[in-house]
Length: 235
Image 1 (tube, rainbow, N blue to C red):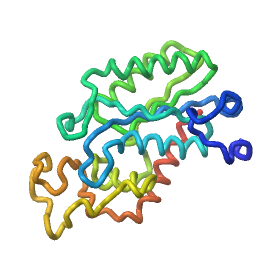
Image 2 (cartoon, rainbow, N blue to C red):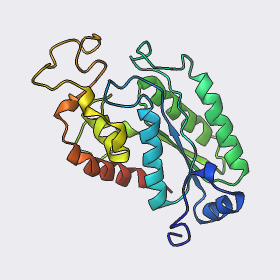
Image 3 (cartoon, rainbow, N blue to C red):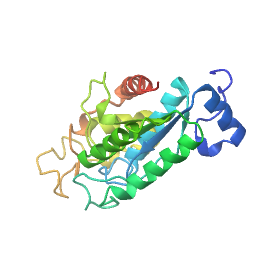
Image 4 (cartoon, rainbow, N blue to C red):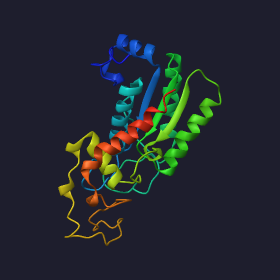
């Protein structure tokens, strides 16, 4: 399998039907990354959740097989719904309908496993994907759904967060040009002594370890740990 697909992208939307058939004959698995358009402080892109989920799915697919759907950049839940450049769905049904229809069509095309992987891990988002997987798998369908999120990764030494050290390192490992630490004031010039939901905070909206203390050299270690865990989910 590895030799045949060595120079072929795992992005399903970029492949022709024959290429998709060949990939599915080797490993009938589809990865579906979920994310949001959401404020991630001044140093990170607003699409971080979907970008990291998509990037991690590609890394896992390259190693474990399968193809990756385009990321769905709509999530639900969390405490940043009113922040700038944030578009959060108010009702989980808007997303759930897309996921269920995707599963139905993939089963009709003989896919055997759908991995729903969310880079956005608000409680409402996790409850939604867990419920979808439980209800679908109870039907004993030929396709089985595995639903999880990046905050459930095992083997990492850094606590998952929102726009903090964890997400900063993960984004840097996949797309370093999108991370601009110089958009944040230094710790010395503006310490973290304000409510982070206060727009005057130097790390407005961050939940977790102050990203300014992150060692970007640790990015590859984190990426490796999350990818190792993600590949274990493939049957």
